[in-house]
Length: 230
Image (tube, rainbow, N blue to C red):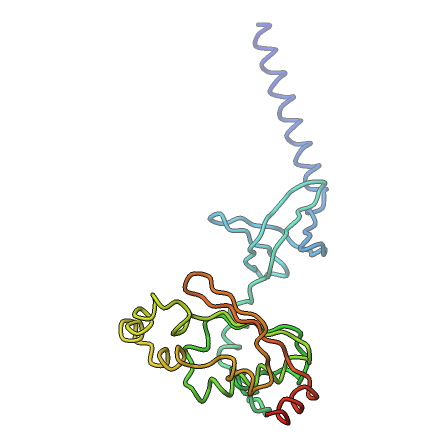
């Protein structure tokens, strides 16, 4: 009999506790939602492992992290996806027509740099890929953008005579790998090519099959005196 009274009392206690919990829960406001630090009225749903925030009857998918604590729901997201209606509208809207013509793409013979604005320029295995006329124009453009006293460093393939034992390799290389301008570059006098553009060869070093050539930008006075002496 005592056991019966005990079970009956426990049932009454649990019922009262549950009713009080429902009452307390109903009186508590819905947790606030912080999206990237901004308070938004709504609630967070989780469907198939994805989080959604219901704001004014609009569910927006979130990409980011979610955390719960201190009576708030904190969402850290990178970007809210646009609603489907906005996506459809943006897809149907014609792209605006730009009235400004696109700027020409920079090339090796026309760099978007002011004259005499560069201290050091570097070229790595470019010149042997250029046709002879473009090679000359590229040398002039490099000399144009370099300041007087500035440096130009050229890293390129070795040429005929640099390593006599490799002259045979230089001769067969263009046919093996379809390098149409390689042979003319291998026979080009780099000192003359860049001197005519305004650059003076000051140092050369060879590392295996690569030749490093260092040039200095001549001042206009030095160029005039050189022409007069010639």
